[in-house]
Image (tube, one colour):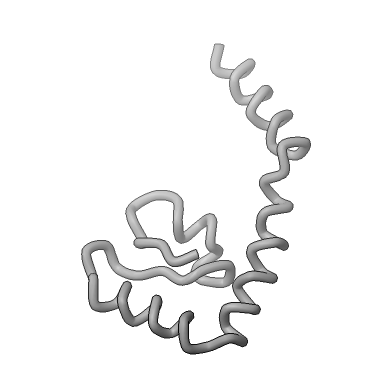
Amino acid sequence: VISSNCKSGPIELLDNGKYGMLYKVGDVSSLASKIDKLLCDQKLREYYSNMSKIRSKKFDLAKVLPKFTKLLIIKQ
């Protein structure tokens, strides 16, 4: 994942870059640099590929559905 570091979400989801690369919103040069870095570095691609599989487990439906259900019940 390469994501712009907008105000809410990406930095938390990617754990400050542990699970994907972040670039400043609107910084096209930084985005291009990160794309180039991933294209040229197989080990880095493998690292982020493995990390994304690990990170995705945190958002498994069986884990998040009870939390969303609890949130919706509390808010009603």
